[in-house]
Image 1: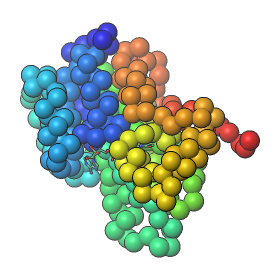
Image 2 (image 1 turned 90 degrees about the vertical axis):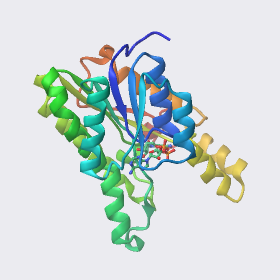
Image 3 (image 1 turned 90 degrees about the horizontal axis):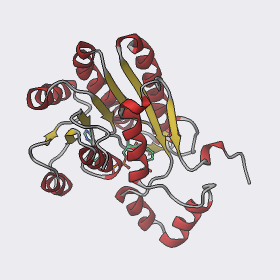
Image 4 (image 1 turned 60 degrees about the horizontal axis):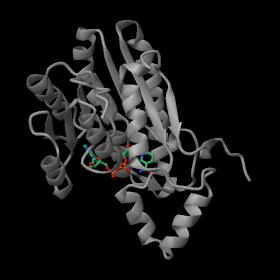
Length: 257
Ligand code: NAD
């Protein structure tokens, strides 16, 4: 590895599985002190704790939808490793419904996790970053923040808003050394996506269909998203602010074949 984040202090929310796990693992390999997180202590959390360097990482159980918990997470991070350099707001959940069939609880949970979770954590971390005059925040949005797939309501509403939060905070604090960007992944082969594909009547056919609709004819990997997060988190991206990087193999630019 190349120490692209050597001794930087990074928080990655929702990082015991999937994309977040790939980001936390890559950041640790690139020399960062990493706080990784989930709203629950489960097998995935235990496995992640077992693989990470205990002197340079810390697992904190906290739900991003709870502002007080996220303040505690940030306070614990600073107490253990010092001021935070990087925040990756990755924790998120699919809430997919037909709009009129959606329950009020689904709407509330979607916004509490997919939008407010990022703000709760950013709000807790920003005073420390502003004190240092430096910091990089990366929000994991989605192609659903750019395009609409019917039947996925209200997830795309929250992801559009997350991109809005990214731009807004990026401008608010640009002159004080803070950068805020987002990444919009397309379909990424996480365990969740594998489980969904396996639940389809013909998993192989659905996997092939999903790959075929992408211009590059394959589904993305968590590591590919992690490398984009690494670049945005690092000083290499120091003139990149208040923008979004789509990582979807070009799918969202395709009109039709
Ligand atoms: P995942 O379900 O595999 O992992 C989510 C992680 O977040 C887990 O560690 C889980 O424990 C944690 N988490 C969930 N709710 C939480 C909460 N309230 N507080 C703290 N932690 C919580 O998810 P994934 O597919 O890796 O997705 C990660 C992010 O990427 C999400 O924001 C998702 O919307 C976005 N995304 C994923 C894809 C994809 O194809 N996988 C595509 C576009 C965007």
